[in-house]
Amino acid sequence: MEGVIDATTRAMLCEQGGLDWVVTEFVRVTNTVLPPRTFYRLCPELKTASRTTDGTPVHVQLLGSDPVMMANNAAQAARLGAACIDINFGCPAKLVNRHDGGASLLRRPAHMNALIQAVGDALAPFNIPVTAKIRLGFDDKQLALACARACEDAGARWLTVHARTKKEGYRPPAHWEWVSRIRHTVQMPVVVNGDIHRLPDYWRATSLSGCSQAMIGRGLLADPWLARRIKTWQATGETLPATPWSVNAQTLLNYFERTHQDLPAKVVLSLLKQWLNMMRLNNPVAEAHFHALKREKELPRLVDGLAATL
Image 1 (cartoon, rainbow, N blue to C red):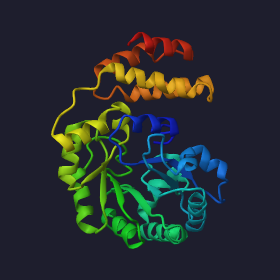
Image 2 (image 1 turned 60 degrees about the horizontal axis):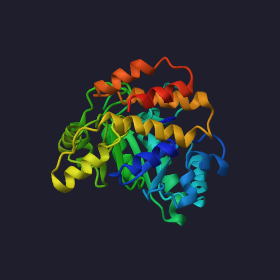
Image 3 (image 1 turned 90 degrees about the vertical axis):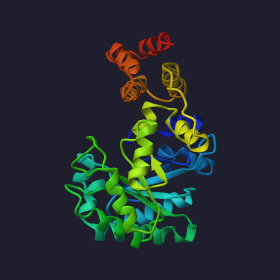
């Protein structure tokens, strides 16, 4: 979710209710220890006890392949107040994979093990956990179970599994039943992820995987009430009504209000269009508004267009 789930977005989605914790965009680790300003830019919640404005815990995600540098940067984040370090073994982006990051490491379970162990050792004095997110493999699923065992043996506290390989990208379907194989292979908690866009998706993903928890990303951007909808159903059996377009539109307008004084207009314009594009998922009303507004090149005109839909 690089470039999408910034601190403002995290805060706004958490305010809708239903989220147990959230994860930052990945912090890219190369050959140096990043300065505090980099961590504060990507995770300003470090200054507020690693919690969003409504109190939801925030975990810092690192992406890299050098065990020493990952360990040193994990310790840096811990010194700055991180409450949990998550390691990204799932990013399918070509640029990331070309530089030996993200899903590219799924071809080397032993290296994943060494990396997690190094980070865990660095975090031991701070008494905070290390977790990991993986996919079902790179080109195929042959190493999925080996990767999961490598994470557990290295000391990962829990594992989030995106139910597709890197090669499969984000193409449907997500193989939730495959996550069940991983869950039966390891003893640590497993969190299912991928294609959870609606309440029935959540029910099927957790039922087929056997997982008690799910991570949602694009689905929550498409429907800001999705986490609340899931929690309400869990607690009461009640199914909330469909999220009205007014909620989606107001979410975008609130994002504009919170960001336009700090970011260049063209950046805010791009982010609003990107978010509106994600709201099209299973939403014909959002689809119509996206096509009506996608060619707007001026931020004020886009904002006025969104306001006019309320």
